Structure formats: structure tokens, C-alpha cells
Image 1 (cartoon, rainbow, N blue to C red):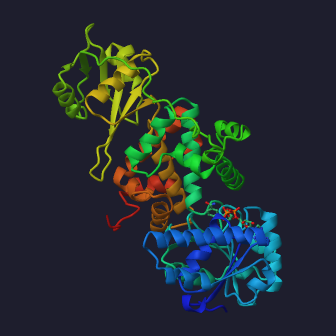
Image 2 (image 1 turned 180 degrees about the vertical axis):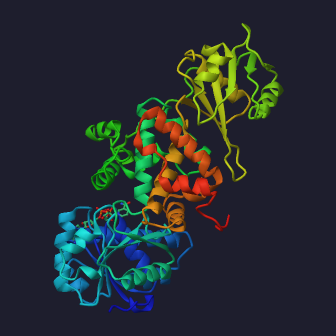
Image 3 (image 1 turned 90 degrees about the vertical axis):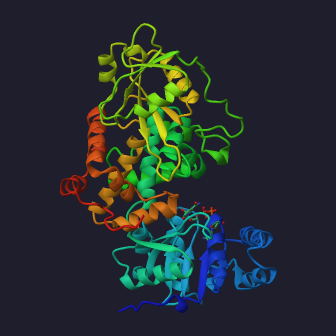
Length: 509
Ligand code: NAD
């Protein structure tokens, strides 16, 4: 029976692979006062890795966050080596951070079998490979677990601690305690493709690509919808360019192999950009072009109409808009006439705007407007929704009006969910499925997305705020419009809606 080792029992840690992740992990562990064996494949990579680590510490010194003496002490605790066997011999814990290729990892772990102490814990920092498969090739698979840090490791607070079916709970517990001791927040997950963060993030990013390729909105508006409308630090297409479209495709394919279905099927545009080797920032171009200054998105300017018809909405969703338009000196009527330049109806993400546009009698001049509250005291987002019967210049008139009255607006085609709810609610549904399948609890799911992706609140907290019934209605409309089974509300979501139960009952904030 294994006992739970306390963080104080882990005094010597070997980090293998001093690339982007390994150098950060080695720095983090040496800063905690532990001895680190920093291991690379040859002297030249070792020099590069140590130079990266030193540069990171020097930056902390230049910012006044570390003294010269403290930096020197941290460096003195790190023992660089290009000899794996010698480097790991005394380690209590080994953390592997070599490239994401199963054959490389399996070869290394077989080598560790011989070289490590019998009671050493072996952890892999893999983002998407099966920890079980890595463990399976070793003589003592029970001591192998996942310890998934996020980039940059010294800064990002989340660590996913991954157990296989063979990992005794004591090992996961030791790694979770160690993570806390390193100043991180651990979430414990079973070995399943994508763990928590990538399993929720990557299909959402794929969905955003589908919206772009089906011309639901421009890349800028898709990104703006999620930063302004949901409060995320970065829009999905900008984030994809940062992660790298090649890395993203590899993770998506792993998820597709593991789970099948339509949600993980790579969007054709993602494959095309990969074929063209447009991988994002690292190659200078992905969804955005980083070599050329992109032209301003508001190309087709239109004059602000002198008269706007706002079709009365019994729920009062457009009352404030009417005041704003009137205050801008534009005439507002409730019935369109030949003088009317633009007709506005209240748009509901559960229904298409088309029917209201036809009922208004001037379908070519109609836009729907849907307001998304931003929360956190910031101005919300206005989704300007264009039914397919709308005339070509109506979109520009809507945008001109929004600019005149100071709305933060995006333009979306008339498809259920529009932009914010389509992307967000499909992801919330995935989060409920993860919980339903017994894979992770609501608090861990929310923590992982907040600390791993900078969400202002976790997806299940946001689902509770939106109301399970609302989320279901939008998902059902998306399913009816697209036929895509991925949008079917998962059974547990329907149960919670019926029972009026919250996923994060009692969660603070
Ligand atoms: P990287 O290519 O920057 O670094 C890998 C390093 O491992 C290289 O310096 C290489 O020389 C070295 N190496 C290769 N084979 C070795 C061996 N047998 N022994 C010792 N060293 C060896 O890669 P990275 O981005 O740091 O990723 C490392 C791991 O961390 C991967 O499993 C990756 O999926 C995972 N990860 C990456 C990120 C990220 O944002 N890049 C985030 C979380 C996890």
C-alpha cells in the first residue's frame, strides 16, 4: 500500500526536456527550494534550455521581483545534465516535458524504469496523449501519472493532475499537495482525451471556425462577441493563432479518435489553413495576418438613416434603444413607411428574425438587435442580426446607427444562438456532459476554465446565471436549424432544468 507522500518528502525533482514547458517547470520547482536535475538530450539543447531559464530569472530580477542573491540561490539548486540515467537516479519525482510524440515518451519511460529509484513518482506533462498508454509500456505503471502545467508554467495557476486506472489515489494526492505547495491550484481528473481544459476549449474553438467558414460573421466580430459578450480575455480565432493551428488540429484529432461524433470533427477551414502551413502567429499568418497591418474592418460605410422604425416589443427589450436613437436626433416610428431607412425588431437567440422581418412588411430593411449583458459593470454587446432577406446595404446602415449611438456591436447572420449564445451554450452543454459522465465535478470544471483559460466565471456558473431552461431552448433551436446532434441538450441539463437545480448551488460570486 502506497502512502501519501507530503510535499516535504519531494526534495529532489528531475525535469526532462528543457523546452518551453520544461524550463518553466524547472524554474518553478527550484524557486520552491527543491533541488532540480535539469535534463536535456544533448549539451547544445541543455545550454539553450538553461539560457531560457536564466533569462526568465533575470527578468524577475530586473522587475524587482527577485534579488540577485535569490536568483543565484535558485540557480545553484539546479543541476544541468545531458545524461538521463545519472540525472534521475536520486529523484523523488520525475517530470517529463519532451515533445508530444508517443514513441519518444514511451522510449524515455522505459529508460526511466531502469534508472529511477523504486519509490520515485513518474509524471508526464503531456497535453493530449494517453497517460495510460505512456504508463502501459513501463514495468511499474502504477507510479506513472499526469501533471499538466499550463504555459508559462511559473505564472499559470492551474495544474491538471491525471490518474490512470492503475494510479493509486495516494499518488494523485501527493501530486495535488505538491502542486498546492508550488502555489498552484490542482484539479484531479481521470485519463481521458483533453483532460478538462482542452476537452472543453478545443471543440469550442472548432465551432468558432465553423461559424467563420459558414459566413455567420467576420473573424473580428466572432472574436469581439466572446471578449465583449462573454468577458473572455481573447477571442477564439485570436487564441487559435496563438496556440498554433497545427497543435490545435492534433488535439482535435485526438478528441475525434477518442469520442467520435460531429463536435470534434475538424472544420474544413482548419485543415485548409494547416495544408497551407498557415499555423498562426508562429508562421506570421493564420486567421489573421501578422505580417501585414490588417485593413480596418468597417469598409462599407453607409449614412445613418434619418428615420428608423423600431417595431414595438411587448417585453420592452428595445425601450432603451428607442431613447438612445431619439437622443441622437434620429426620428423613431413604430411602423415603417417609405421614408424609413431601417427597421429594427427585437431578436431572440431562440428564434430566427426572418419571421418578424416578414411580419414587419419591409423585410429588405430589417435587422434584429439582441443585447448581451456583459456583467462586471462593463457596457454590453449588441448583436445586429441579418435575416437572409435583408438588402445588402442594410447591414452597413445598422452598423452606422450603432456607431452613432455608441453601441458596441457585432453583425451576425440569422442563425439560432447568433454568436455569443451559439458558442457559449454549446460549450456549457459539453461541460454538463463532462459532469454527467462522472468525469469531473462542477467546481473543478469551473476552476479549470477560469485558471486555465482566463474565464471570468466558470462555464457552469455562467450556465446557472443564464438559466438551464434558456440554454436548452437555444440549443434545441440550434439543433433544429443545423441537424447537428452535438447541439442536443445532454440529459442531465434537462433534468436540472426540470428540477430547478443549479450546477453551482452555493458557489460564491
Ligand atoms: P519543446 O519542443 O519546446 O521542448 C521539448 C524539449 O525536450 C526540447 O528542448 C528537446 O530537446 C527535449 N527533448 C526531446 N527528447 C528528449 C529526451 N529524450 N530527453 C531529454 N530531452 C528531450 O516542447 P514543449 O512545448 O515544452 O512541450 C513539452 C511537453 O509539454 C509536450 O508533451 C507538450 O504537449 C506539453 N505541453 C505543452 C504546452 C505548450 O503550451 N507548449 C502546454 C502544456 C503542456
